[in-house]
Length: 446
Image 1 (cartoon, one colour):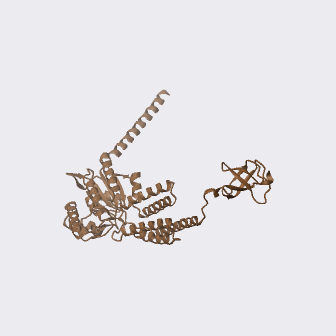
Image 2 (cartoon, rainbow, N blue to C red):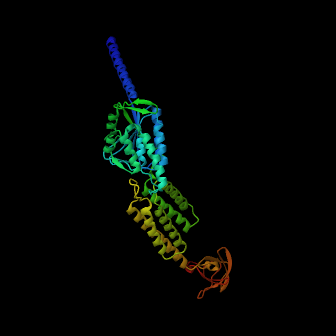
Image 3 (cartoon, helix red, strand yellow):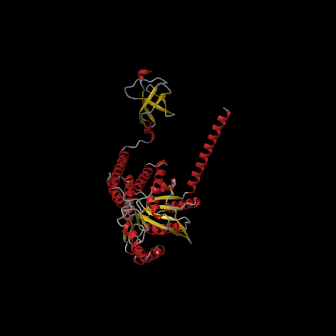
């Protein structure tokens, strides 16, 4: 009996030992498998993009990841920020694969050069790349001399980045800057401007597995076939700042902020409306520093709020408010709607019209209240005591003294009133100089 029990115990111990060894080997194998860090960015080239990619590369270097995939969809952005992104990517010790995805995405303008900065590049079907000619902050043409200088600098940049891609790729890269040429994903792959065409991340990893890529001064062979993919998300602050690249949100912040400030101006003394308005306007200004803004639209919106203020201070029965509403709607419609920069979102027309009309109605009501207040007769001085209540300090028959508003007054009876005994409650009915006329309050209760 004891021997049988001992035998079963040994068998169970051996089974548990085997399971532990198997689990340990699986964990070791999993920890030894390559890992790829996936970054996803959708929006214009901003300081958020620079910080996000920098953090991602640092994370990948700490984890000794096999590669970084930057999945990107961008209409472009400023040359200064683009250069910072290029520097961050080129200084990475982990291979960076720039992937234009999903379907319908684009690498426009500065996004073209960022794509070339990757150690490898790929595009999903139905995507586009190119149109990298330099323009002004609002999408306008820049001066001929300045344009020529900027183009030559950008062409030299793409030549150095596409040096190992062949003459055809270099010519196409220069053409995207010189003549704003844009090409499809298949055309970019055929010319050698982009390495592979991939439907999704697993397909991308499969196609790039085994390739040798130069990172800095060393060559690295990619082992990606069985790599696990870890997604690296935007931080909370980065996500909030990315929201400020939405022109509809910026428009609402600008409208709410200006309205709150005007409320503070029309009814001074508080601070909540003014503080809220300043915060909203500050956030809107930050966003307008990122997106291309049409100065013509900005002038119209400023003029609209000037008209609103004038109608509050010098009411014109709503004429200035109506003009301000029209100016506000026109300015908002063209504020972010730059036809020279495709890919940047525009402000929703129904949102603009609805907000403009709501704002106009609000200020019309505000002005109407102000006009009625101006027409109402002002009661000041001793007349304000009419209607106040008090009590008799002495009998009033027909003259006497009363206590009203904390002061003693000489008082006489209102016509058709009998005498009022001392201590009775009275109501002031009229004032004659410093003499009050009073009547008894609720005489039936006395």
